[in-house]
Image (cartoon, rainbow, N blue to C red):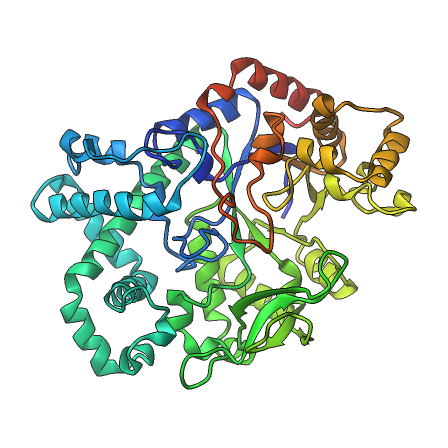
Length: 501
């Protein structure tokens, strides 16, 4: 994949402003796209758009194919006749600048239930044909997801491996009976997915008309409690009770003495190879319906992954296991053609990972916040002069502190290295602009900056602290007044000066 010299902004849709406590796919999203266009940006990067569960992480979704109902724009539903003004009279208080996912779980689901009841009752009849077409087109994943969601609700929200054994194990007769008993609940799930994709497709069309494409994440692994794991048990390492026998993570490193125990089920690559990697082909097909460019999170796991026996308290007792990434990507390419993929190749990257990335000409990643650590920092691969053209450079990512926050907390060695490298001594106020300029001036074809950095915000605006489930993870939202025309003009001037417009 060859990316033209260009730039973009990283912002998850939940961080958009709006009246109902979380970003939505409506007017504020279109306003953000307009701002990107005015600023000369060609890309909007988002995180995974799937339905989130415990911890609210977009990287732990109930489905690799479904959309997040929290993002559905309620004002659009009102305009379409599915909601009425009286439905909003009991809306709770929404804290400005932060998402309260607990409130969203209760209130927004109630609102979507009202929209579904209105549709069943004959409101918005003009949507009926489109809904039927959506159900038919997406049945390959939608039927399983709708049944999974209905069964999960019927079991009080328990994970699928704690359900009644017959449905846990997908007994044919038990599933047939569940489809009858839970028909209304399944229909509701399908209708809500229809609303999400209808709005997302409209928003992407709006972006394309303004020269903006969407970069979206797909995590390499799926969540343990997901319709993907439940409906495809033979593709994962599970025992007879649906418990994983091994799980994913990363080994101990500089950042953690015990590594990271993610807990995701691991793929049975032998089974996937036998059916021609069909699941992966379908997953990439689904991602291309959401995104113009796909960023693969933890790309190194396609060369080798860290396998941890289950159960385990830490990731220490694991081992590296080779993965058939070359075979898989070739099968996907044969089925779908050349794919627009960015490889998240951060961390300890070995020659086999580099070979896999380069053989398929996937751009890798660089993060400038990582460029100035260590003693002999001149050999750091993330320094601007060491970057490659076929690469995507970031000031920071969703897992980093904001750039202003990072500089405020950087150790003296990092500060010294930056001063030596740039022959400057930046202030906390001015550091973010310096790092952004360095990203744009680099030779990397694509430069992406989190909106928090463009707004020069501190640690209070950090999106996520890896390895934690703290109350502030994934909750940040920007002030709508922050997207000023003069900020767009400044960004456009930088974009034009560095040949990225």
